[in-house]
Length: 82
Image (cartoon, rainbow, N blue to C red; front, side):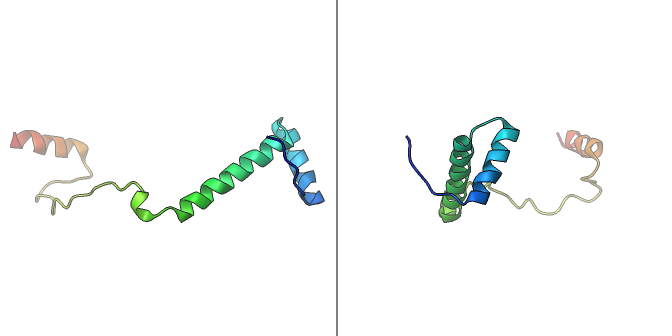
């Protein structure tokens, strides 16, 4: 869709330089920037209940003698219990 907007001259100059550096058009930059702005706005306004929540479980304290920083020791401990 084609539309007309008014942009500050300095901002337009910055966009032209950026477009040249990125080898794209000013229109593409504006469209991407507006899309990102709308996405950020939608995320801020989205209710918390729609956000993904990872369930967590309290499994209590580790058993005595188990060093959770030592993967080999944890595997050895787990294999002993089987």
